[in-house]
Image (tube, rainbow, N blue to C red; front, side, top):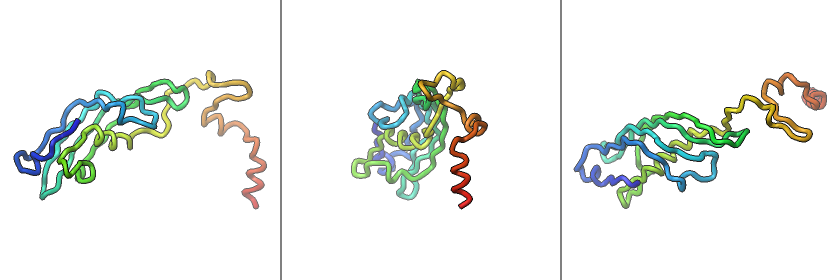
Length: 154
């Protein structure tokens, strides 16, 4: 969805209200663990001050992510505030801002590298392997402990 910024450049308006509920289209969400971004609540505006466009907004929503362990869809709530110059984010020659691209570029910073809601790791095991928690890793003896200790002393 493109927002026409020429109204600000021509001083026809003081600000453009971008407050709305947005759903980011699938073509913006690629090559990551985000499944969908729907019902993103944006409160904010674009203003012009001394020939510069500023965006001030608050974004809240729930992203649907792929669980890092089970690979099942899980909800991950997020919230962010943005207050900065709009310069790099718009097509200056066209005076247009693609709001979906702009939101995605800022929301992607909130996507966790790993996220899971799995509590029972006992389901995740196979022939000769099993998934263990951080606590189990610390408690169990490391089979390479002697080698690591020897290398650290040298």
